[in-house]
Image (cartoon, rainbow, N blue to C red; front, side):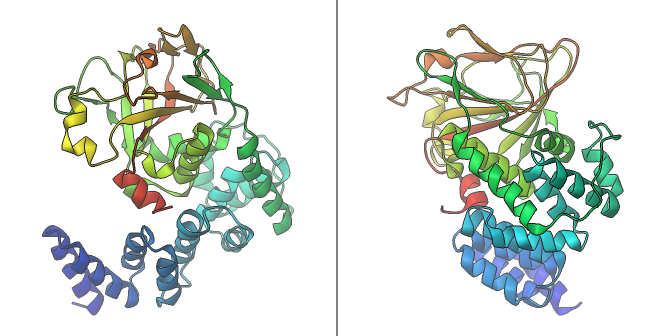
Length: 378
């Protein structure tokens, strides 16, 4: 057994007895001996509390020039340290693109759909490097669309990313009721982001659950008949994190207060009958809820496709929102006294002839375990 295998085995044994300190110390050493994924596991663990130490660690391991290590150094920099897409990060992504790194291409594609020249060039690069991934992501697009094979300069890509980043602060918010409980932000997600989330996470789908009103444990119930995929910490990638940041900024909430993002699919006849997302008084006595963020204060939805059925309905407000690709819907689950907002009573109406795809994000009153892991202490 090699030295790396010895430390990986030690890490596994320590994880089994929940000795996390020794487990991550073993992963740290395995990374220093050249194991790519041990190095990344340790770095992400460290990034949640000290992003710069994690970046320093990854810059010193023997596999520091491996494309996967370089890509994840950029991810840690973007979400835990810099907290924005700065020019240095874009430049390094561009360098990885020149090496045919598919994940870097996909990240830049998610930022540039509004710039036809840049987007078309990057699509061509993805097709050249990974045609199967290209075909999966663009299956909903017209394949006869023009591709630009002429190289696009870095400055133009930086300009495209920065212009999209700036638009976050000027997004239009439409309030749908006089009490400003429900608001809609159109065109928040691009068609590419919507297609990516469906392609990337559809494999996680399972029958949906609801929380038991007595003890807060998950349970099956005919009130909710969709399928759901929970994008937990180990599944959260660059683009899903970007979407979570966008959801938080456009709704005025905090990323570190969020539960894991969920992807949902409603097929013919499926629905989510009228309900509240906020926790009941009995649920709010449960340690599992109190210790992981407390009350659900907000719900944020993002439609991944457009339909003329399957509306999100708020009967006490006489408001209905039809699914439109890229649109965010945000509503308050509690009032100013942190009590259930009775007018937030809502449903997902039945889908009759097609499929409805959407993302759901629940936000708590305090920090969640997921929020701290994925976005650190920022």
